[in-house]
Image (tube, rainbow, N blue to C red; front, top):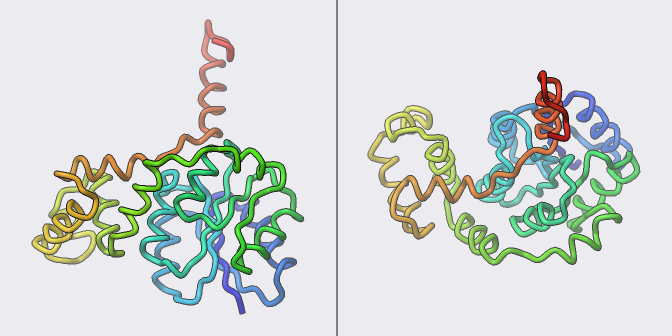
Length: 235
């Protein structure tokens, strides 16, 4: 029985994906999470999850960082990204970092069903309208190198790197992971070597390179700016 984890902070969209999954595969078991911490908790709790449908901009996720984290910590789990962002270059980057598919939030139920079936069958899936533009989008050499370096990290090292990127100090990281501070220092030394960086600042910058702007937030910001006295959306 396939197990699917739907990771999105919008209840209505989770319901749409759950309905598509129920029609796509018989006897599919579906779990849900509305934060990225919830995704990791679910993956830690269950070893039988086959596929994660991951919202690119859900709380706790920062662009492609969540994808990279899951691919590093749970390599047997397939990840298809879900997003309102339909930029072919963003989709190209997602595929280069290990995404098994990319589902725009504009997709209809039929496309969602096709996506779920394809990825569970170990096939890469993109919406037909975006396949040509994504194929024509150039892979960034730096992205391929970054993905290869991040793949060298152990799951615990990736967790440490994520907390470093959030600005936590060694003692705070040790408390968060329930380990000794010297263990964190040992992980950091290994991280610096594997990523070929000199210090924690450079290590954090590498992870932040995976951040991608949320077009929905840009629209909201434009709307706020346009509502201020003396401004208009065109300004």
